[in-house]
Each structure stands twice: as C-alpha cells, then as structure tokens.
Image (tube, chains in turn yellow, orange):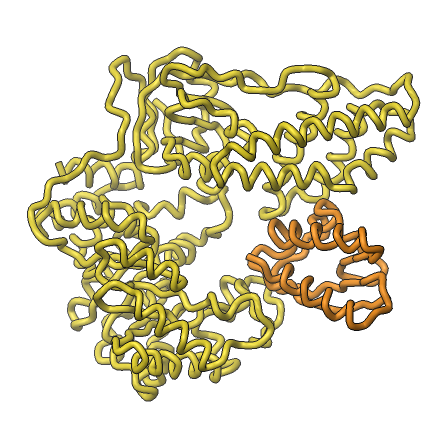
Amino acid sequence: MLSGIGVGDASAWGKSFVLGPKFKAPAEAKSTSSTDQELVRLKTAIGEVVESLAKTAATADQTTGEILNALVAMLEDPALVEEALVYLADGWNAETSIIRAMRSFTELLAGDDLFGERVADLEDLALQVVAKLTGAEYGLKLPKQGLIVVVAEDLSPAETAQFTDAVVAVITEKGGPTSHTAIICRQRNIPALVAAKGALAKIQSGVSLVVDASMGQVFLSEVPINSSAISVRPKVGEPIAEVKGNVGSVADAKDLALTKASGIGLMRTELLFLSRSTPPSFEEQSKLYSEVLNFAPAGEVIFRTLDAGSDKPLPYLGLGNEENPSLGVRGWRINANDPSIIRTQLEALVEAEKLSNRKVSVMAPMIATISEAREFADLARSIGIATVGIMVETPSICAVIGQLQGVVDFVSIGTNDLSQYLFAADRQNSAVAELLNPWQPALLSTIASVCIQAKAVGIKVGVCGEAGADPLLGIVLAGFGVDSVSMASPAVAKAIEYLSSVTIDKAREVAQAALSGTDPQEAKSLARAALG
Amino acid sequence: MITRELTVTAKVGLHARPVALLAKLASELNADGITVRIGREADKLVAANSSLRMLTLKIASGEKVLVELGTTDQARAEQIFQQVAEALAAD
C-alpha cells in the first residue's frame, strides 16, 4: 500500500492517527503597544517555551533530551532577541518579529546539507514561541491508550518527545534515515517508515495498519499481528560464518567481551589521533592497543590503520583543504605525505602484541590498486606483523581481487564506503539514502564477485560494514562465501542466532534468491521467502 | 585584544557540539568581562556567545578561524585559547 525507508527491524499493528496541519503563524502585524512592552511579551514567551522544553527534556530518554536541550540553547541565544529587536523597533509585534528574526538566520543556514538540518528545528521553535504569544495550543494531543500509528508530514524532536506509550509505530512523508524521527524511533525501538511519499494522501485517521520497518512497507490489516522483533530462530549448528565486533575504544572492547563475538573484525584506530595538535606517540599508541587486546574477546583482532585525511582532518597531517575530501587523500593515501605516521602505528601494534601476548592482524583502508596493497603489506610485514589484509571499499579493487594472490591474507569489505563509491552517492546526503541501502542488487552482486575471486586464490573475506548487522543479510553474505561478519556489539547476538539457524547450503539458496531481486525490497523479500 | 588563528578539527565543523561548548565558554568569559569573537576574517568576527551567529558562519571541518579575546592578559589568553581549541575539536 505504501513504502518508504524502514527504521529498525520490527513491525507493529495499530490504528492510524494522522497529525493535523501544523500550527500556522498569524499574518504579520504591527503593534499598538510600545517596543518595550512587545519586548517584554517576547522575552516572557521565550522563557515559557524554554521552561517547558527543558522540563520535557529532563524526563525524556537521553537522545531526545540531548536534542531538546540543544534547541533550548538556540532559543536562549542572545542573537535571537537582538535580531527581533530590530523589527520590534520598527513597530512590528512580537509574533512578527520573532518569525522574521528566525527567518534571517534560517535563510543563512539553508541550502547547506549539514547546517540545513537545523532550519526545520529553528522554524519549529519560532512557531512554539508564537503559539505561546497568541495563547494557541501547540501540542500533539495523542491518546494515552490504545495502539497508535502516528502519521505526519514530518516530526520535530519536540513532537516526538510528546509521544505517549500508546504510540507503536510512526510514518512520515518526509525525513530520511538520519532525521530526528529516525534517530529517536530507532533509539526507542518504535518501528518507523520515513520518506514514505504519499502517506498523507493515502492514509486517513482510524485505519488499521501494519508498519513493517524491516520491509519498508505499510499495509492495511484488520487483524492485529504480534508487535515484536523478528521471532527467534532455532539453532541447527555452529554459525556458518564467524561473528566479530567493530570497536573504536577500550570501552567498546569491554562491551564486546560481554557478547559471544569471536574477536574483533574492525578496530578503528582514529580515536587517539583526533582532537589533538600532534600525533600520538609510540608509547601512547602501544598502551592503548595493548589495552584493547587485553579486553577483546578471544579470536582474531584486526586493527585498521589510520583512516583519516581531508574528510576527518588532522592538522598535523599537513594536508590542505580539498574540494572533494571523500575522493581525496584519505586512509592509506596519507602515507605518501608522511610515512612516519602509519609506520609508528604499525610499530606500536607490534609492541602491543608483546605487551598483551596476543597476535594482531592489520588492514589498510581506501586501497584502490594492487600496488597500494603490496606497498602496505610489505611495510607491515617488514615491521613484523604476520597477518595482513586490506579493506575493500573502492570499486577499483573489487575488479582485481584475484591479483591479490600472495599479497594479502584477507580482505574486509567496508560496505558503507563501498556503497558510497559504487553508487556515486554521498553517505551524508539523505536525499540519496535509498542508493546506500545494503540490499541494493549491485552491491550484493559486487560482494558475491569479490568472494568468488578471493576464494579462488585462497584469500579470506570479511565484511565489517553495517550490512553485516542485518541478520538476514548476514545469511546472504555467508551464502556468498563470506568467512566473517563484524558489527557493533548490540547486533552480535541476533547475527549469531541467524547464522546458527541454517546450513551453508541453505544460506547459498538464500543468497541466490537475493541475487535475483531487481531492487532492494525484492531482494530482501526473495531472501526471506527462501529462508522460510 | 589578543587574536589567534586556530583550526576547526571537529568532524562536524563549527556546528552542534563545538558551537554549544564555545557559546557556553564565551558566556562565562563575558560574565568575567572578557569578550570573545570568532570568524574567518578580522573585520567579520561574530560574538562567540551566540550559537546562531556561529552557525551562520558555516565553517567546515579543517578550516581555520580567528579567535579574538577582549583581554591583554597573555597568560589568561593562553589558557582560554587552549579551552577554545578543545571546543573546536569536540566530537
């Protein structure tokens, strides 16, 4: 009936509750009172909105609370009243002045992807102040009982903070995977569909619906389903692919050790390097790396060498501003500029091996050619690291995996960046989010091809991008021949459950089924059907 | 006035957390009688106690900024610049 981008993996049934049109500001008008009187009105209203937002923030969950507090800070910004004063002095009333003042800021922020996200928040804040000034109601008034599917054009953090326990699912016409709605719903385990074009035209209030976030679909259903996450799959054997964890710090390693993950598939080493003006010393690094090794669960531990550069700038790398940072000097490419950085990193890893009495594997990010792979492998082995690999993130390296024979021991597919480069779609741009859906057929067949080439020359294949965290996709990857999947701690248990619930032959069937899909939704439903 | 050039190393540029931290710092310094201004060029600095004004500068990660402090106390300024640098690197 309707499709969109699903947030989370759960489904829920409920009755639709379509939010009415947003509160509209009254027409612009001049005031009959003095500027000073209007200023007092404005400051009072701002103070009241700040108070109510702060109160909501205090009792909301952490994510919502943080967002609301950031909005409070913007409302308390001295520049807002300063700007409004310009219009007040011209005789405009408080309502008009705050809207115009806010607009002067949002106009400057709009059009820029990162900063543009704040525009909707700021406009919403201005409306809240105007509602306070005119004495109008500004709230959702959601029922407290029942099972409700909220349907809206989009939702502001202040609105999601007003969700009652009756809200079981959310559908928004706008938004994307990284919008406030998505972030908050994911945090609260509320299945949601965002960017669901046509939702408001197709859904009236009071209609019984199922929102299936995992499939990105909504359909009519008079019959309630069990609103729950995908049901538990019974075990038939050991996992058909190893499940490892992605970490970035000692704290992450400790969290991972509480799961049944077999070692670490990706240790992001940037932590020590960011937020400082000089590179971390050999001693600082070997200490951190050995601590990670001390706490990491048993199994292979793979460290990724520094993945920084123009898109994650470090002043001491001496790189200038680039036009296209994600296509520039990042990852392994910084080695040409200053070989000492990665060399010191590798030496610190060898020292960490001695300190922790555990072996280390290393891999380099952003490798695009066989020469680069060879350069890195030679360097790492000359320093004393036995197991060396590369990340597969560039389409170019996918085409020549066979030539890595004898050069590296393993490869690890970084599906997030691989998708970005394969589909020519910016990871930060929600407008092209669907292209980064890991079920995209072109990504699946690229991964399958990498596996075939790697197997033929005895190279192990891991997947450390987000794709591995999707339990069903994990089975597909194992079916392609992927040896290990690595993911954030919270996803480990489900992945192990799924990978232990099928034989490798079944996984191959599921993988083939997925490959015959011509779009992400088809690929996913064919895989699901084949799994049974 | 003491001015220094610093680099914004936070991943998001002069946005979100760095801006919030700077605004808070600047507010506290204002209460102490020290003004703080920031911007790309000396004749286009904005008050650092305002998140909104800082956001509209649209300074991206890796860019350099001028930070101007309303004090002649070198030691104090040094201390403040260190705090500002930390704010500009906050992720």
